[in-house]
Length: 446
Ligand code: PFF
Image (cartoon, rainbow, N blue to C red; front, side, top):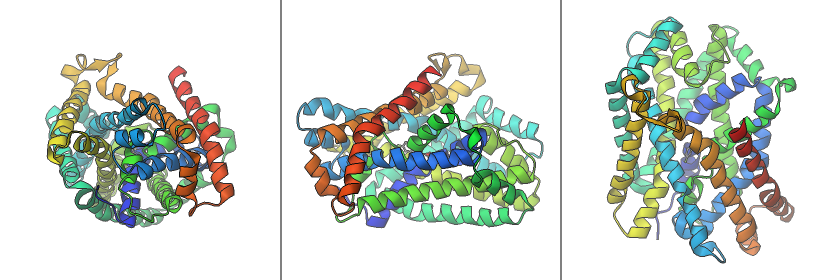
């Protein structure tokens, strides 16, 4: 019998997994690069039309199987049980993501430390500091990564209730409060907020291209932690009587709301202090924002601590959800202790994380490449563009075509009308897998 979340614990833990570095920089950066609000409208449409559908399917696997994903698939597959259970190994994708994701959380920790001192006022200095952390100051990168690594593994060692639920129950509300405080501050600085709101909310549909549609779909999947066994693993610990549809909607709502608040905060500063809205990924957060904070003196330092702490929390609650699926499987399959399972997973993640750091460190970079890219980038690319969508297709296909329809009708009957169920089932079988395949093929060939 596995440990169960409380109802609120489940929603917060799942939202904690969803809300992560993706919301902090992928979301604002993609909004910035794809014409603002039109991208948000698309992202919302795809989140509800495609990701929501597949999310419910992943939830069903965990809920009906009630054990680790490999065993759940084995239990639920009507035939070819062994082959289907192999799909549970998509949990390795989550572990691969964890290795480079924790390196980024390490950078965030380093920026919290920097926020207590004087921040760079010139973009060139800020760029140099960030560049040095990645390519020159390997000791800081390693120390921060190690600290983050031990924190995350410690949380997972405490299990679902005493570790993951507890962490999310205090980190998620704190993250929210920090963001709301920053949002209020943003309101007070001239017309930057109005410009940010206009940028985010007044749609400019001429900016939508084929690229935008697919980028928005990719973000929706990454952001909801799909295709990597996190959703079915957490769902295996659902308390009885949980309304699956309402919980999923709450998780999606929290995820979108936090993405939008982050976007408002980031773009208010960007507009108020004249930085570039199309600045890419890490540049927007680690370079533009720090120089903007630097202009505000002590208030800027406080804001910087608050901002990077909220990112730290968002990242940590996501990272624990990447580790748990594999640990849960090892504990069930080999009857070993959680600590032993964590040691095996930990050694793997730690070594890969160190490789990621060395793949950016100038003196060693040339020796740490994979398919012609730094290992860090290769892992990011392979997981987001190939493994995650592939996992999401396999789970949608499994639930749509392999699971007995009656089992799903029973599962959802209290939470959806008959018409809604049929619409969901149709989308799951015929639209979702095709839509995901479209993003995958597009991203591979573009
Ligand atoms: N949803 C997380 C984010 O937006 O940053 C990323 C993520 C979390 C991916 C958990 C995979 C995962 F298992």
